[in-house]
Image (cartoon, rainbow, N blue to C red; front, top):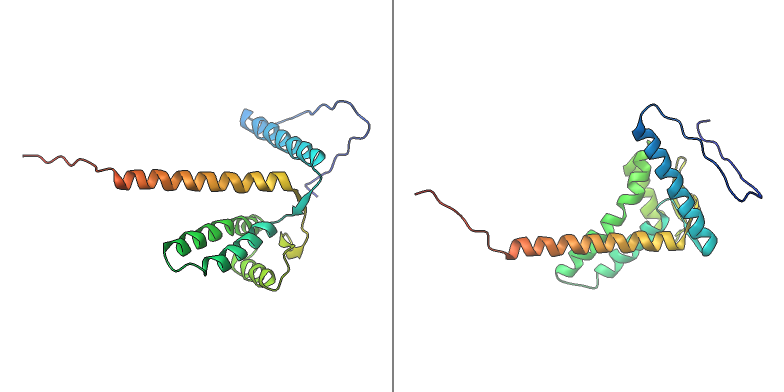
Amino acid sequence: ELEKTVTIKGCQAATFLLRGSIPQEIDKLETAIKNSLTVLKIAAEDNRTLPGGGAIEAHIAHELKSYAKTFACREQIAIEAYANALLEIPKALAENYGLNTTDIMLELKRRQADGEFYCGVSQQGCIDWVCAEPLKATRSLLRRAYEVSSLMLRIDSLLISKEIPKFHKK
């Protein structure tokens, strides 16, 4: 098995020894440890969790697609596009696990439609409660995704609305 779990109990401090053949490997390991410790800190501060493995993203996408049907104009397209962007998270997980993304996404959508909101993507396919994610981390992820997409739309509209001067050779 390539993964190992290390449990530290009753310690006030811990030392991590990182080894790698190139400095970039060490930097990646250091970032992974910092991210893991941040998630642990968030989980310790607020013990509310959500199902992981893309379950929440798939559920929000399912709800957004239903909500989009209440609009008749361009808003519907924008809402559906945001829902599809959220579905990229479980799709990426399936790809990373080496699973057939089409089959996994069809099963995930079916199970979400059947009310199985805790179903996410794991190495075994679509299963209930793959893992638990801190609510605060998921909320932060969704906020950042919204902010980035809004920023991109503002930049896009600025470029479209701004007249670009054309120079012609005479």
